[in-house]
Image 1 (cartoon, rainbow, N blue to C red):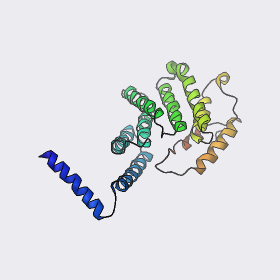
Image 2: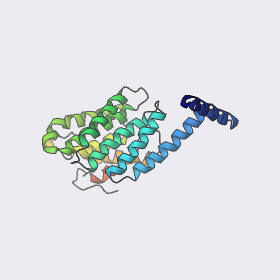
Image 3: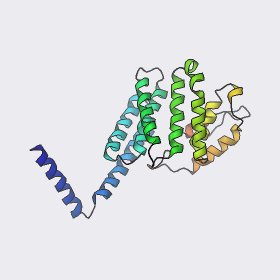
Image 4: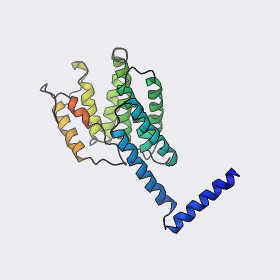
Length: 224
C-alpha cells in the first residue's frame, strides 16, 4: 500500500509539473537554489556551535537531494571545522574534524569541485586541529597548513582565501619558519580580490574577516 501511494504521489507531481510547463530538472534546480540561499543565510548569521550545526543539517539535506553538487558537501565540512573554532575545548571536536576530513577527501576526487577551495578548506582543517592544542599540535601540523594553502594558491593565484589565511597563520609562527612573502602586499591583493567577489551559491565567499587580524610588515594591524 505504501509503495502504491508513493508511486501515485510521484505521478501526480510530474502531472502537476507538466501542467505548469515546468520540467523536473528546472524544478530541482529552482529548489536547490532556494534551499542553498536559505542555508547560507542561516550560516552567515550563526554565532554558536548549535547554530552552525543547524546550518550543517540543512546542507546535508540539500546534498542528499542534489548529490551531483559539490558545494553542499563543502559547506558540511566547513560547518564542522568552524564548530571547532567556535569551541576549541568541546568533546565533540574530534568527531567534527573526522567527518570534515572524510568530506574533504571525497571532494578531492570530485571532478566538478574547485580544488583551490578544497585545499584551502584542508589547510583550515589543519589549523583547527592546531587550535585545539597549539603546544602539542603546532609543530606536528604546521607544514600541512602551509603546504595546503600554497597548493591552493598554485591552483588559483586569484583565490583570496588561501592568500589571506596563510598570512594570518604565518604571523603566529617563529620568524625562521615564515615565508619570504611581503605581508602588506599579500593583504592588499587579498583585499582587492575579496572586493571583487559576489556572494552566491556557486562558490565559497568566506574569509574576509581574517584581514582584520593580520599585522602588516610594519607591525601595524590592518583595519578595514
